[in-house]
Length: 446
Image 1 (cartoon, rainbow, N blue to C red):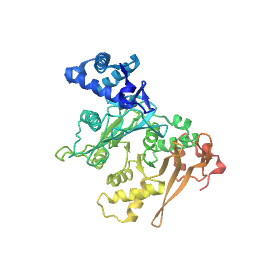
Image 2 (image 1 turned 60 degrees about the vertical axis):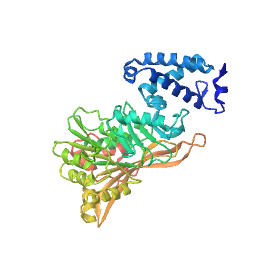
Image 3 (image 1 turned 120 degrees about the vertical axis):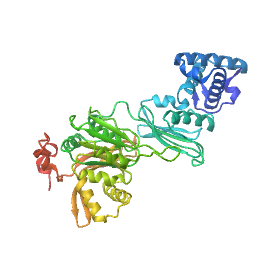
Image 4 (image 1 turned 90 degrees about the horizontal axis):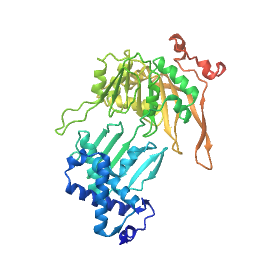
């Protein structure tokens, strides 16, 4: 009998259960075809996972005997477990979906799978057999969500039942093969205290933001993709009093609020005929009729910015939202652009006045070179001077260098000493936190 290595001319150092990626994928595919050819798909799904694994073990043994391949018990078990994943779950990426340390999964065609761990990218050792294999998994994901993926509808943005966000794009738009991106979210949301522990913010920033949320200060969180905006938004939402009614509005539901009185709204894409779409802007308008104490918009990206600003300026203070931007100043510029996307012909000064009166604080978050996610700036929106919105930094992250051994970024969060416009309101509203307790009275400037 020949060994698996000899049969497939193994030279790849990456191995799975003592086998190369090619040999492993070939056996999984062959076993999967053998089982699905003998047993109806409905019957397979109704079996218990243990029964499917045992069925796969028997099939692998038969296949090995026919092909005269020598397999160890561990190799047989590894192949069988992957076949079971193929039948009931998501094939080569199933273990990644279960791994709590993996925060993002990126499939660039059948032969390249990358994962993000602790903010850094790594290549995964497993692969899909071919484009058809990858498409089967994609279709299983998409169809379970009630969506469609084909040449006439080659893009899908949705979420899995566990809250993970899924983006799919296939040929002809994706030139090198079907592309799948899964952004996972922790089952246990990070609390503000945990964000302090991992260095995202300082204890002083946590206490300051707690007071701001309790005092119904409107906050926008900005940053790049994967910088941790939604995580921070989730954490800040814990400071909202539990007796308030909260309405959340999202493109794909990601927020995990802990309060009891929460109404979650999610926009709807158009159907196959191009009808039935419900946009974020429509949901924002509808939310105003739902008697909300707080409106949380997961991400502002279009004309809904106008409706959101009008809501904030008409009695719905304390709202929270996120936006993609490279700095607090860029966030204000993007808001102005998004208001114009609503089709209005308002003059720029009128738009800026709405923005300056609606938004009180802007938090800028970034993913640093070492993969860590930090709040690098908290800016106070102070109002208008002429045609310009004025801002002042309240906190900054002062990077002093990098560790020569680990490459970790070295720095600390520092208060600038400038007093936000709304600080005096905190004590008037009975908020327990005093600015002097965070920074020291002598540090505050007007």
